[in-house]
Amino acid sequence: MANVSEAKLDELRVFSEELADAARTVITPYFRSTLLIDDKPAASATGQPVTRADRESEQVIRNLIADRYPDHGIVGEEFDDLNPEAEVCWVLDPIDGTRAFIAGLPMFGTLIGLGFQGDPLLGVLDQPVMNDRFVGTAQGSFLNGAPIKTRKCSKLEQAIYAVTDPRMMTTPAQEVVFQRLMRETHLTQFGGNCYAYGMLASGAIDLITESDLKPWDIFALIPIIEGAGGVVTGWSGGPAQKEGSVVACG
Image (cartoon, rainbow, N blue to C red; front, side, top):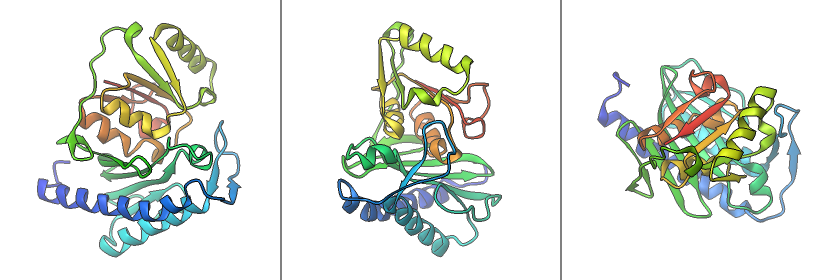
């Protein structure tokens, strides 16, 4: 981030919220409507459904980025990468939580991440139905414009633990850790998708562990949690966006 000035970062933050506004316009009319559902080739343990809302909203975001910043790279879930090695690159998941979206449940969100030289710089999590928007940078994280902070929880037995889907634990070692955390934490919540990370950043959830992730599933969430005082890493201690596994806590 050393080569990105505060003024430039603020410009990019404002633009990222414009992207989120545009995605809302596309996504909201499709919520709780009749949607044609496609299934992508098996790419994860939990399957990959996709809808018109996913594709149309990502295309709108891509068009806006290409118009404003044609030299920026784009990596997204629904379309091929565009200049992914660019110094500045956007990482997009138009609807994280497509299963919930299809089922009419508000546990989904639009993820818009921005990386500089491969490192997460800025993140937006937009939940259009509940009108919640999380924005995070190294300067801090915000929910609908108000500062947020993670909760400090020193005892595992007091922790609220979240996992989107137990099927994400794809190895015996991961399953062992998952079962232990379910036993030893105070409460386990399933099905939160990206919204659970917003709740961790705002102090309602203490711990998330997940696996079987793609970069667009986690990239935007890293600045939001870190900007709120939390920690995000891969299970082996490396960058979560590269490992495909996540441990996030306050």
